[in-house]
Length: 269
Ligand code: ATP
Ligand code: MG
Image 1 (tube, helix red, strand yellow):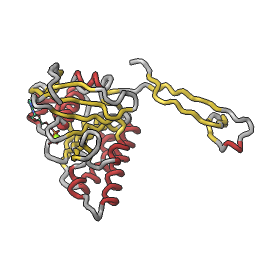
Image 2 (cartoon, rainbow, N blue to C red):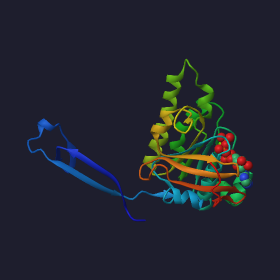
Image 3 (tube, rainbow, N blue to C red):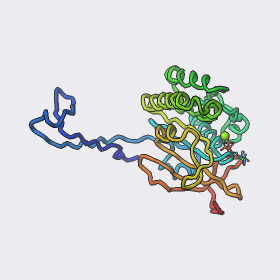
Image 4 (cartoon, rainbow, N blue to C red):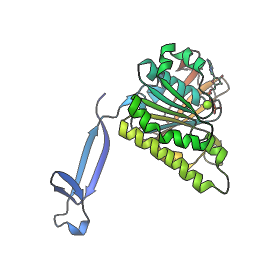
């Protein structure tokens, strides 16, 4: 893969001091200059094992950031998690899989991957938001001890939704934000992809749907993909936010026994 221009950082008034670039207050610098640094960093991606999703994401889910697949019930969020996990595990990678809805089905996994690959899945069921907190706090140790290659949280917000109410919204939002901050830190520090799923609720926004947790998961997710389903069981994946891809790019896929495959049936959405 060719190197991508991932960051263009412009510092105003920069001074080079003992090998370190330091930004300084404008008025403190006599020789005022504008220096633009181009950092060429190769963005690594992990294949989803689903051709249309890889096409959508230019090769797969990005390492180092949180990717969030959101959509209504039945839109295919869990299937995406199992599909990507199956692909990583079959290639010998290890997956930390946090399941807050008892949705992970070994049977479904083995429809897509071989039985041996299941050994590479570190599955943790969580049943309340505090347990989810603790599990996410302990993830870094697991990542270091086991050499985890992918983290999945399906769903990030179902237990949040059970806990949040009119009186505790601020506190519970902070907890959610802290979980996402921890996940984001692990993604960055260990250069691995974090895949989360997000439920939605009806709103009066543009497309009538809003993410549970609203701005908190939106802020922390550097890739947001909206999943939807039509009456012919065709799924659509659409980029809602991405660091380097245009909003609105979309692909169609179908859920089959073998996994998620290309669909040519556009149908009605
Ligand atoms: P929720 O929000 O309720 O968790 P979800 O977005 O996670 O929903 P999934 O569980 O990924 O949705 O998708 C469920 C759909 O996948 C169902 O419509 C089911 O029929 C379909 N499905 C599951 N296994 C297969 C299979 N082997 N072949 C075809 N369709 C399947
Ligand atoms: Mg699900």
